[in-house]
Structures are given as C-alpha cells and as structure tokens.
Image 1 (cartoon, rainbow over the protein chains, first blue to last red):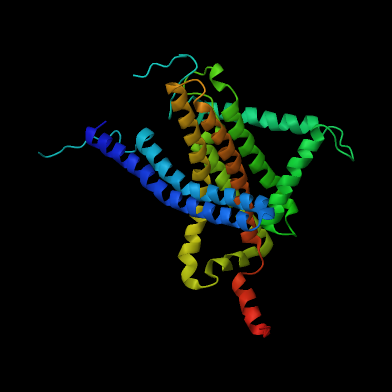
Image 2 (image 1 turned 90 degrees about the vertical axis):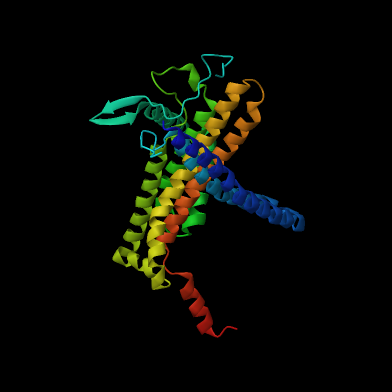
Length: 89
Length: 254
C-alpha cells in the first residue's frame, strides 16, 4: 500500500478513536454524577436509577463506537488501499 | 512478530472470511454457521421448555415465562398500553437473537473448530448481520405507522413545523445506521480487545475484560430491542406533544 496512505490512515485511525472518547467520557461522567446524587437523595429508587443510568451509558457509548468503526475501516478495510498515484517531485 | 504461546488456539484475523458461493452471490460462511447455531439454541430451548405447558410453571417453563414477561415489559413501556401485543414477537426475536448470539460468541470455545479461512465468532460481529437487523427494524416501524395511519403517516414529516422536513427525512436514514453501527462496533471491539489480550497474555489477565464484554453485549441487546420498540411506538403514536401543549394552554386550567 502506498506509504503516504498507510501513514495517513494510521494517524487518522488513532485520532478518530482518541477524539471520540473525549465527549463520551465527559458525558458519561456527568450522567454518573447526577445518578449517584439521585441515589444519595433517595436510596429506595436505586434500582430505577441504575437501570436508567446503564441505558444512558449504552447510548452515549455508541458515539465513541462510531469513531471506533471509522478507525477499524481505515485499518482493515481501507478504501484507498489499492491506489497508486504519482507525486510530482 | 508476536509468537503466541498456544499456537493453535490463538489467531487474530479481521476481514478474513470463509466465502461460500450461494446462488451466484458470495456469502460469509462463518456467519451463517454461527447464526444456525444460535437459531438451534433458541429453538431447542423453546421447544423443550414449552412442551407441556402447565398452569403453574416449573422447570424450564419458568425461565421462558420470565423471558417472555421481560420482553412484554419492554414492548409495553416503549409502544404503550394498547397495541403493544402484536409487536412482542418482533421485539422478542430481536432481543433473543442478539443476546444469544453475543453471549455465544463470547462464551463458546469456537477456536477448537477450524475452518478454511477466517474464524468462527459471534454472528453479530459482521456488519451484514447488524445492518440486516436494522433494516428489518426500519421496515417494521414503517409498517407500524402505515398500517395504523395509512397515508396520513407522512404528516409526521412536517410536524410540528415544515422546516423540520429535511431533519425528519435524515432521521429515517440515521436510525438504521446508528442501530447497526452501535451493535457491530460494540461486538467487534470486544472481540478484538479480547483477542489482542489473549495473544499477549493468555492467562488470567483477559478475564475482567471478557466479563465486561459479556455485560456490555447484554446491554446492547436490550438497547437494540428498546430502541426498536421506541421507533415503532413513535411511528404509531396518535398525536404529538405540541397538540397536548396547545390543549393545555387553551383549557384555562392555570
């Protein structure tokens, strides 16, 4: 595979997952914080709060997973892999 | 080059498939084999447990009744009190198929069986399976909306305001996309992580991540079926919240 494409794909894959994880980290942390506060306020509601929390985690996590899918495509199913182009030096 | 300690039990190959030619098309054979295994598991459990149904359940019938109640609860919460019963089989199929395939991919020692190319794993780690499930869900919620409201279903594209039309149309494409990618990404990522860890340190260390993988894959089955129910419920609902708001404002209650 063209080394420029390979290098760019690797950098792109790493950035894709890394940047996608920032948002979901912040979001899930905030959600967990409010959930724990809710449990502290009313310990009898722990079951429902935990259920809602886990469901929300799955949705927020899926945004990071989209980034992971892009990274996997770049690494294992790269659409530009067979391209040969000529660099005018 | 990483030399694995147990040469025949460890292999990491992404994108390698066991191609079968069926009717002029190339299919991924390893996905079909594991799908048939999952179908046999679910079918076998249902047939043995529900053979003589008793009034007071015992044994395996307890388990299947518990699962049925769980799925009914999902359907009732997402679709509403009336009209949820016809959708229980569909949501139940989604939930059971995804749950059993995720857990069978994680728990069974598939590497003991060798296939010519690629490796056996959960059928949902292939994008084709998850896209098929997502498109089925799309067709299901269109069917729900159209059968309940006829052509008046298309009014929801321009409610509550006309300028939302492109967003609503886009939603019809992003819904199956996000459903399929969420499930595919979760399952493939879990398999890759476990495979890489097992290649590096085959004993004890991968276990916490395998447990996490079991947990998240079960949640993903629940999330997929819950979202499918939510989309069906949203397509079938009679009125939109803006009408309730207007009625409330008109009522002079406050």
